[in-house]
Length: 113
Length: 113
Image (cartoon, rainbow over the protein chains, first blue to last red):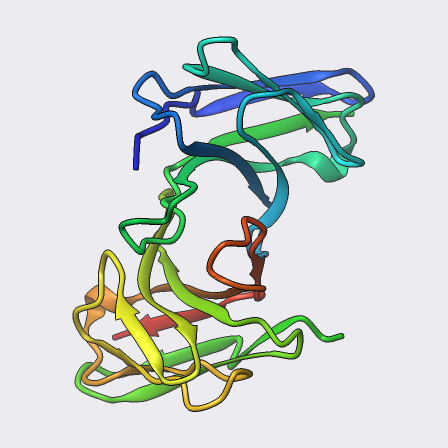
C-alpha cells in the first residue's frame, strides 16, 4: 500500500474548525483513503473514508484533492472530546496483498478550551 | 451488542512464560485481526483471519500464534514471552474482508519483565 505523511501534531481551539492534512503522493487509482482516530487509552475508531469525491458524515468531512495526492479531514467544530491521534490510511480496494490497514504515527490533535 | 471485547485489560508476564489474549465479537463479523501498538507508534498488524478456520500472517507475526475455531473468537497466543513483546494489543473486526470500517476492542496492555 502507498504511504501517507501527516504532521506529528496540531492544536486547535474549542469550537473552531480543524483541518487535518494528509499527503499520499504515491496513491494508486484503487486506493481508498481512510481516517481513524484514537482517543487516549482506547482502541482506534473509524471516522470516514472516500475514494475520489468529497464525503460527509456525522463526525467529519473528507476533502480529497483532484489529483488524489492529498486529502484533508475536516472537523467542523472541535470539542475537547476530539483530542486524539488521527490516522490517515490508504488501502487498496482489491485487497490484493491480503493486508489489513497500515497505521503510521498519525497526527496528535490537541484542543484548547 | 457488546462489540469487540478483549481480556485481560492488563497483564504482567515473566520472560519465557506463555499466555493467551482473548478477543471476542458478537457482530457476526467474518474478518478479525490483531495489532500491537508500541509507545509513540502506530499499529502494526500481527495476524488476521478472513473466517473460521482461516488465518494468515501480518507484518509482525513472529512469536505469536492464532487460531479461529469459531466466528466469534480469535485468541492470540504468546508462545514464550520476551521483553520486546511489551506493548498494547488491539483486536479488531469487520463485517467481511471487503468492508472498510473496522471495530476495535479496548486493548490489552502487556508488560514482559
